[in-house]
Amino acid sequence: MNTLLEEALNNYKILDPQIEFIRHNENETYKLKDTVSNNQYVMRRHKPNTDFSLDIFGDKKHSVDLLISEMNILKAISESTEILVQTPIRNNNSEFVTVLSDGTPVTLLTWINGNTVEEIELTDDILYKIGEMVGKFHRFSKSWSKSKRLHRYSYDKSLLIRVISKIKTGIELNVLSNEQFKIVENTVNEIINRMNELDLQKNSKGIVHSDLSKSNLIVNNGQITPIDFCLCGNSYYYMDLGSLFSHFDKHEQQSSIINGYKSIIDEDINAKYIETFFVFQIILYISTHIENAARWDWFNDAFNRWCKKFFIPFSNNIAFIIIS
Image (cartoon, rainbow, N blue to C red; front, top):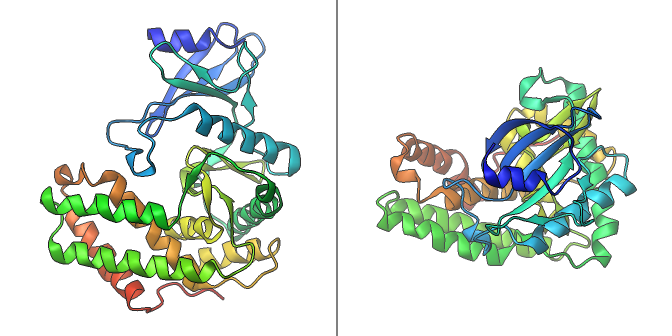
């Protein structure tokens, strides 16, 4: 066991822990089991992998305020909804965030048993329940977010300005051509135009998850649990639908998700705005990985595919998502 992990464990009442490394992306993540009580936990040491940068958010390292707000969001979801989420565990000082001697913050959450959506066979019922869960989360957020001023990331026009500046460095790095960058720039300008339209709609923004990938959705006894709220923040609710559609790309899958969502959120859903945050997700991914793209053989082909299939049609207002 490394010294910092041992230091982190000393701040919690976990007896004779079994430790399993899970992954290292935006966090270094471990599964812990208290072998006396058999309780299981997730411990996150909030230090991003060198391939993952938070600079675009203006957060070179995870701030304590950001993490406290994430813990409070999870606590509120757990207390105010029927959604099963990982709940935060306080340390020996009754605090949600532990700061280690090297300055790295640590948080502890309950463990959720089950399989990720990417590990199981997708059925209409599962997809419907995914949409239903997101609808319940948004219903909660629409009422809860109004009275809260949380220190969280914002997926907004200001972020897009930083995103486009970051992607432009790809020209200097010989990752992108001027023509490729121009396509991205046109796409970002159209995203901003559509955000301006959404700003005219009542109650269009609040706390969103922002990263609803298949690996962040757990199936537990038929119930869908969203995990990894580390990148949650303030944005338009369509952000989560765009996130889902970027991972569930078949029309039948998307229709089932929307049917589940609309069973909770009785509003018209416009595919135009799902497309907006679908391409936002891809562009955000490019901006956070542009410095690594030069050593990825697949990047240029992927980028050209994104341009042809999504960015150019989007900029020209040609629909590529149809919902029914």
